[in-house]
Image (cartoon, rainbow, N blue to C red; front, side, top):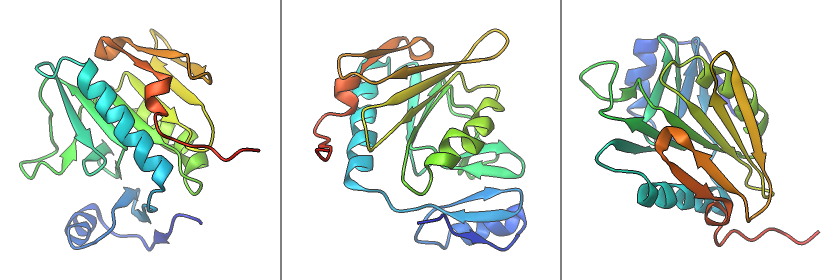
Length: 190
């Protein structure tokens, strides 16, 4: 299933229109993209990561946001990560507090319709946000997590594919065991 793209609209029109929609839509340079629904595996992985990190981070120093919080990439690009974590207080585009500006960590759980976009276009958007220090992309169809971290001069990537792997999240001062990420997720036998 492809992500549906609508005709071009202004940012202000998008903000007003999006408030009336039942489903979320991302806005990229005038085009609006309907977000697909999520599968059971996608939902389990997202909640597993949220619970694991919620227990592991110092909640007095970090703020967690669900996939309902929109992230401003630039004045013409707005996306919905599956999870965002901010160090300190969240900053917003305006007083409405609908468009967050400053996560240090974002999570994307791949969907069949978005896997290519998550690993290319959307990842490059995250690279462009100065506050983002890491992006974790988790595959819902196989045991595989990709951690992209901001280095001194470029981004670094690590892949984790064994349930015994532990992902070190320096920017959050914690670790994320892969077996917690995939807890209760059942894969089809091949």
